[in-house]
Image (cartoon, rainbow over all chains, first blue to last red; front, side, top):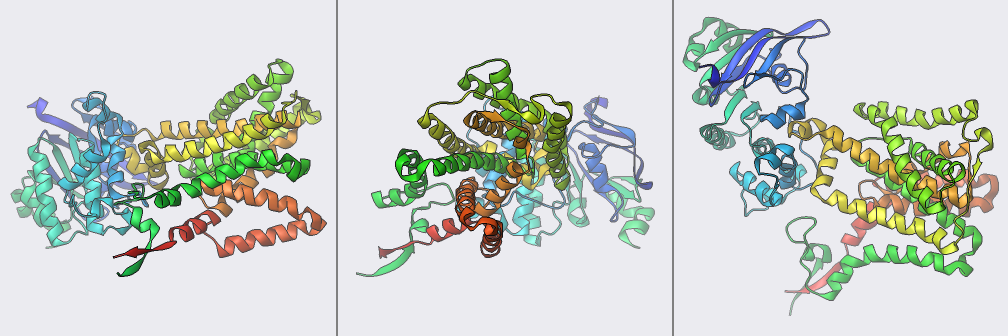
Length: 248
Length: 334
């Protein structure tokens, strides 16, 4: 049972100038599952992700990856281990073609190691990955400058950047928000497909319906505290969750 | 037979910016001319010694050196570090060459090479800790460092104090002219090449979004250090060479001029292409010298010129020329 737990978060607390952002949050993630994190705005979801991925240091608490402590490690070292995150506000690298954005993770040490010391033909690999997230290979879209792409494509470009790093744990911070319904229904299968290839997924999402369909487990945060955890069906019935989040 | 107008640029581009499909000699000429012509012009100037005279030789030398400093500044800008401390690189190179040549009696060539390397390492160690600061805070530190060294030399009277140190001359006219110009071109095309590779994409990405690059598992600090090291080495080379050219090093090598003029060159020429900063240097320095005939009015005219150019062409002269060049059209048979 213990070996199944790939990521463990223990008693994380974080204060910003005395304001409590997270208070004693603990949870674990099992290998190969899809974990959803929901909560109202300002409940500390992104702060939690920032702490797990090393962009912030917690005031209290520890993060373990495969039993080893990773609290306070540099973000690029955590990404190197295979914990890869997307960003809520997409800021691609402007004035270069979209596929060149995907080249950046392909230059990392992690990919060099996984490919056995060879980086391979990065342009080709980058376009393969973009095709996987729905950039039509034979169209001009992968070659377009990022400033010409629509928001939905930018979000999927961010997903492509994460996939390129061959993650073990993929943390998606509101990847579906701002996408059209058609884009959402084409992106959700991509995430499920990754999950079938044994990628553990943590999703922060406001699109409750899509999240509850694919998630194995849900954690609910409110004002920095974990107020509920369980199967989506249990969460829907939970009265406190309804009160703070679903607004009933 | 019907014809239509087509931009040559559109006709030869395949898919994206840097892939071309060339079908004729004319198209090759269209592509090669803007790269070849400036190189040719710069290499021919030193041969026209009898035409340009000794005064303009010195101006040419100074221009090449400031162009090298501008390239070094633009490299820092391209990773998102706005530096006002090119004088630090310049001064460090100059003083290191004085140490190697005057105190340790190394020959000129060795002294320049050693001073470039040592100056590069010395400046990187000084500046790198500040590279974690963002934007204006980094700028302030780089502005302070040369002034700090300036005062240290003045107060402690080390390295010749206010008297300065003399160095041995380079000696040969062609070496004096060609080394800075050839090195300037090498740095220019070398760094342009670097920025075109995947490594260059990462450097530009760090400027745009450092966090995203970090989340992609790339050690941004290593990249920043490498860029600072290259930039400082290039800047120190310029200082070391100038010191031998004038056979003298004084505290003035740390003066603000060597920080501000390269910045003006980059702004005037247009950033992110490196060609722009060289073009900027080749405009500013000769114009500033030519205006000397106006005496005291020189600075007024010079400033008005700068303001006008920056108002009319805020993107930089290089980008303006580039855009116009891309607009050249030809008749195409349908």
